[in-house]
Length: 330
Image (tube, rainbow, N blue to C red; front, side, top):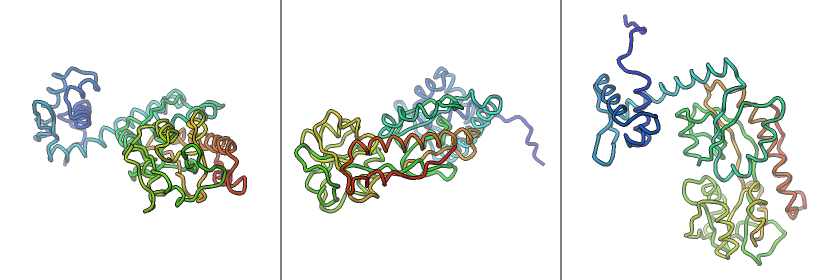
């Protein structure tokens, strides 16, 4: 009968080193992230490989490769490191729940427009724990949530990992942004959008995928130009390069000093559902649900303000009807 209390021939720190090298594919960069010298990290990984009897990494002069056997082990190492991090977080949360710092990732097409509006709601009585925000694309949010570097994420897709719990924060409609001189006022149908080349963000931004899923009819042409930010997109539209799509929360800020025409879409389904997700076993689940309730309220109020600035939707209040979902409590 095996004894589960015998000492292991490797340490949790060695497992963390392996995760770091696999993530960065560089011993130098992994050592910097882990706060140790490169010789120390290399020596500890050599001991780990010797204890496990497997070569995890191929060392080359200018690159590092993960071996097939190493990949199989790393798939097992990841949950162990994550579990240890959850254990440490649980200890801090149990000792003083309000002194923890929650690390929350937010996608770049939402962060500048949501966070100022959400700050007041998150700090009202009773205040939530301190939040450290990170602006990251969706794929990076999911990866860092899985590794334990984030406690939660706010994205516009359903989480791809089954171990992540999530709640919906609300629906954010999209608006068409058209070049100067375009007709204004009424809602726009997708076939009308085909008059212009469609300017979109670069690959990796989920807003690009959402816009393409709604707007890329056979008659719509995508511009070869790719932007890395919404301000660049709007300025390109103002210069007459084509049309684009903006989320409602970004509309007022990004079009304030640009000569463009903004029009809502006639189809109220054109938009994105915002979601907040966290690891199902997180010790901060209670705080996450409280934060989600307050962020949901902030989004609802910010959208009402944003859409009220442009009341020319069909029927006058059609745009506000799109965003009037029930506001959940905490």
